[in-house]
Length: 183
Image (cartoon, rainbow, N blue to C red; front, side, top):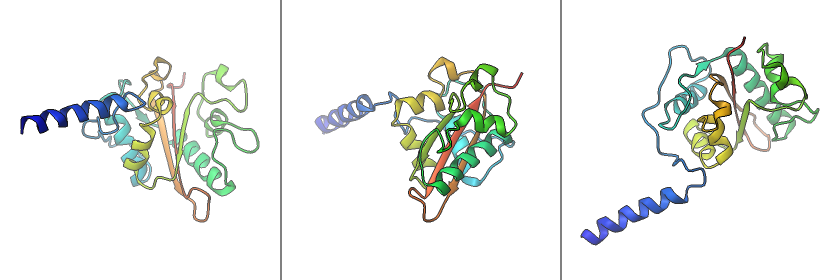
């Protein structure tokens, strides 16, 4: 019996060690909801998962309606035009979409129309938990969503877009946008 208990412990350690992002997808505390979160039910669930993860490095996350609008527009555009990329077929990136939605980004971030310092995207996951777990397998996305890279730690305003586009290549589209507070 002791052998089985120790074997299970080693399997758990090996599973954690093999996680490519360094953060196990199930490693989170209870989701933290905020009464100020807008959005759909799935967008609010995603916000709670990102905010409540035990490795979250941001001191706070503030829901922003303009970033949510930009995130939804990006998700809908990908579904309707059948692409999956940070840059749309016309050459515009996430920073441009955030600015068009009325959010003032740092001026140097708008030097190129295809710029992206704000966005993570995902497709083919129909639940917030499924999408979040998938994002947690990608080191770059973990770095952005949980602000493990210090660059993202002052990006405390965020928006989430989730849309379902029937007859599109990926059906479900998720966009997370974060930005520093406007100055």
